[in-house]
Length: 343
Ligand code: ASP
Image 1: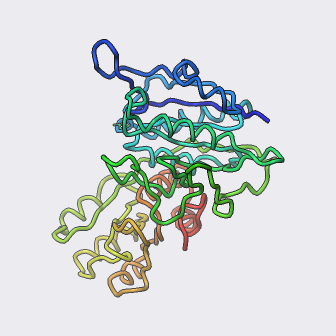
Image 2 (image 1 turned 90 degrees about the horizontal axis):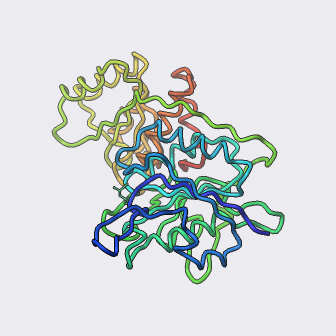
C-alpha cells in the first residue's frame, strides 16, 4: 500500500542550497524534490509539497504561524496519510509542542524535521533527516494504521515525541534531544519503532479537532542567585499577564525568603497561574522533596513535573486561549494532555 505525504516547508536552514555559480546560499526548490533526490521514487510514497508564504527563519515564528500551519494540515487532513513539516531548528520544539496541543483526536503522523547544514550543501544532514521523516510519516501496519500517529520530531537517527524535545546544540548534528522520554524510534540500518512508547488514538473515527487560539499573556521567570524582589514584582505586575513559568532549581526548588514568596503568593491570590519547571534538562519537579519546594506548593504553585520549557509555555498559551477558568486550567496542568510529562 502506498502512502501519500504532504511536505510543508516553513523555512529554516534545511531549505537552502549553494548557488554553483556564486557560492552563496539560495533557496532550495522543494517542489522539484524528485529531480533533486531521484531515489525518493523508490519509497512507497507519493509526495506533494507546499511552501509557506512567506518562508521564515524560525526565530521569527509567532503563535499566529502555528495557527496557519495547523490550519493547512487540517484543510489537507483527509487527502494525505501523513505530514512532514520542514522547520528551522531554532524554535522547532516550540512549534511542534504547540501543534501537539492544538490537535485533538490526531490519527495521522505529523513529523517535524530540519537540518543544521543546508540541504543543498554536500555534507548536509538534511537529506537523511528529510528522507527518513518521509518514510516514518508513511509507515503503517498491515491494517493500514500509521505507526506513529502523533506529533513527532525526527533528527539524526532518532524520532522523538515532539513535546518532549529541546534544541540542545547549535553545533552538533544531533541538535535535538528528549531528556525525559525515550525515543519513539531509533534509526540505524533499520527503523526500529518502540511501539509501546507511541501514543495511539483512542478511536480512529473521531474527527480531528484543531484549537486555533493562543494567548500570549505568558512569561518565563528564570531563577538565579541575585534575582531581586524589584525584578520579580515588576514582572508579576505586568498588565494582562495571566501565567508565569517559574524556572526553578533542581527538583523545583526556590528561595524560601519572604521577599520571594510574598510577591508570588499575592500574584496567585489575584488569579495568576505559576507553573514550576526545573532548569535542569533531565528529571522533573517534586515540590514535596525539600522545604524550598514545599513553600511553593503551599502557596499554590502548580507542578510542571518533567515538562520541557517549550511544552510548558505552549501548553499554558493553549489552555489560556481555550477560555477556561483559572481552576480549570490548574486541573488541566495536572494531567498530561498529549504525553508531555510523566508523573
Ligand atoms: N535560524 C535557523 C532557523 O531556525 C536555524 C535552522 O534552521 O537550523 O530557522
